[in-house]
Image 1 (cartoon, each protein chain N blue to C red):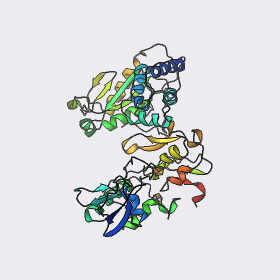
Image 2: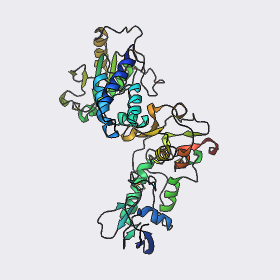
Image 3: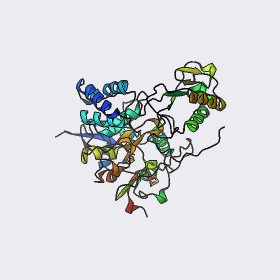
Image 4: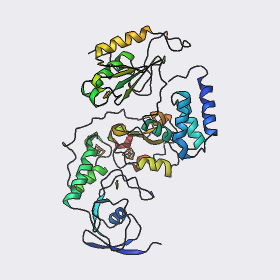
Length: 217
Length: 191
Ligand code: SF4
Ligand code: SF4
Ligand code: FES
Ligand code: FES
């Protein structure tokens, strides 16, 4: 077992397991840090959502909490004008190509984007970046669930579930740049792919991209 | 993209050969794709499936790689290859409009090939003669100042030319194909 050490997060002294990623330590202690892409069991996190920035005393630039390991005596800050600005920018970039229609979304009230907005006092809309409208066709081929690519935040939670839990390999990241997407091989409907419809990916999706049809009222 | 006669066998033996000369490890995936494309001219779906099987990598990941890198193409080169420059200079003077004109004329999207394999359309980034912008490369010939009117001219010239290979019959004009949702494209007017 890893040794217990003392660290400080936002002026609170916390007992933590050395070597654990800071993000999980903070969350366990009810200290909220925005995050979308972090997966607890993943050895080398993607760190792609860029929302979990924190400041550590003695480190001269903000670091992502999902990749930083806990060390004895660490002094961590989760809020500062600089950090808040970074998170806001990351968040606004995510919204800039997001099909924002919460009232019509299956994830309404259980959505990670809404949580981040609430916790950080951010607006669920942005004007700073040019809006990229995405109106991909919804893949509703599976019996119980559907996939709306226009609401995907590319967090990778579903791909992890598909590979590591379901052990199927039906979906993955394809294309690049603004066209980056989670799709099946050849972009075919899920029901025509090797997808087993175990819906572990739906359970993993933190937003309303992969959703149960029954949740859509 | 519909396979031509004998193409299936060709793909299978090509993939077999490339795989047998590789480690079949995940790390070898890009060289494998490169070699197969060098032999076949593109990466057919069947080839990607067989490569996925052979390397034990999910097919979705092979597809992910093939769609990530510009060097890979998922559609066969046409008898006539048209490459529209969208580098900064060409883009500034309407390279995107030139591209759209070709898309309309060929009834395909950028990155695709007509189902009779007569034409393929690609975008490139600066071919090095920006003063002639907007630039288009047609079968390795550089064309400058390609306005939509000139696109019509180029298409007429190409229609007059015979196929590079006479093996194919191109009786039923160019119909769109490709794997993207482009079927509902309207017949818009030429600009
Ligand atoms: S995914 Fe979340 S933010 Fe996006 S529309 Fe649905 S509820 Fe709103
Ligand atoms: S579908 Fe959901 S879980 Fe998958 S990458 Fe998109 S947002 Fe994340
Ligand atoms: S949770 Fe750390 S970068 Fe996404
Ligand atoms: S930008 Fe088109 S040739 Fe340079």
